[in-house]
Length: 515
Ligand SMILES: Cc1cc2nc3c(=O)[nH]c(=O)nc-3n(C[C@H](O)[C@H](O)[C@H](O)COP(=O)(O)OP(=O)(O)OC[C@H]3O[C@@H](n4cnc5c(N)ncnc54)[C@H](O)[C@@H]3O)c2cc1C
Ligand SMILES: N[C@H](Cc1c[nH]c2cc(Cl)ccc12)C(=O)O
Image (cartoon, rainbow, N blue to C red):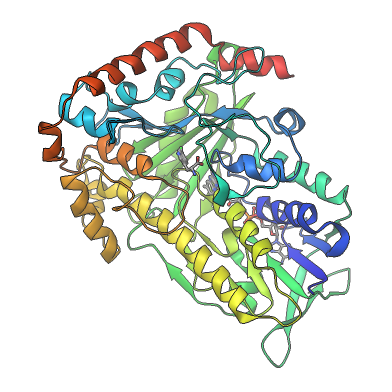
């Protein structure tokens, strides 16, 4: 059996991998993390999926264990501003679609209309986000949801594949603080930590990694090497030469500039969502942490220079940006042809990355780690385990890629070359077929990317209705069906939402009580 693992990299990917493998295999696998003091981590990556709960539960960590130490806040949705037109916004919530007489409520909404805001008419979470409400009451009860089982039940050692209900929130956290927290968790459970630079990688005659040469700690050998070295891809891409499949043709945003903005939470409040505000050459993220805002402009270098991007971001933030140091980032958009080659598995930025719209980076890390445990190599190095791992992880990022392409192809904005060009970029052949299908009926299980990539049809429906750039018709069947039950459900949503807004505490009030 594989008895030893060396992980190169101490960023989010490295310490998520180390802590999860330790929780999975205990001391039956020896784990070492080697990380450079000289090479920094990417320093961003602060919003997640709701399913990250599976990760924390697997480690036996409750919110109270890690949120206060990582500046954590709740994320109920992504709020997309100015994608349809300046001054407009809509939400992509962690909330499954209600179904009436076998038809999703959003399809009914297309037929019977509503107030004009599909998200507030069909979902509860947009109301909570607008009100900056907490998803929990002060006695810690979760707000009422039509769950088919107790939403707060511990998930124990379940995985993404076992997501039965749609938990209504995810998290925002300080990426550096989380990596530090997980480092303490892992080292405290026997993971070895070496602070040093890997200065060379030696391969054997088969082209497998024989050892990592460090500057001050000699050579490191293991049965399996996990490359968490970030965009450098020091092992998988650099040493093993695995080809990189670029997504640049369909996702042109390849730069970012970020600021960490201190805020007075008591004055500003904490909107429980990530905001993505469309700009002339990309979009700006706003991630509200407990005592600061994480914000950054994700843009395409072909349409905007770094200096202009920084100016736009500073203007967007306002006077609070004065004297703050900007972090300029080059992003490598795409994926390694294979994430697992010989005795090396890439996880995190080293294996692939799509721009951070919809916060998919940490989900892809979590998925990769779960699959690594599922397909962990034995001494016989069965290539089927490796090949199945590679197929699953490639499909996950390809599905995320499609979902992100939809944001640009589907945005009604066409007020400059960047947004007009976005409509002309190539899309995967199967996706073109699906986009045609969506015009006749909103996305459903039969017309969305068919392999696991975390996003469900309701996410695609929110984009199709919210972005405004795809011509949409309701299916003719709805002209023949009785609409009364659907109209009653639309009224019920609004009544429930108003009651929640009136009774839930603010997120600031609830989180302050946890400290
Ligand atoms: C602008 C931007 C915004 C993002 N926003 C989000 C978000 O909101 N949500 C989300 O889920 N994801 C987001 N991501 C992705 C997220 O940041 C990454 O998935 C996550 O931080 C993982 O990074 P990493 O650990 O792979 O790499 P890094 O953080 O870059 O860590 C690399 C590590 O490798 C070490 N290293 C490298 N080379 C060597 C060497 N030779 N010797 C020793 N050590 C070495 C470094 O010291 C470092 O510890 C974002 C990414 C970007 C670029
Ligand atoms: N697996 C889903 C993915 C998902 C569902 N709704 C959203 C909303 C946002 Cl902002 C990101 C991801 C998802 C989950 O995590 O629940």
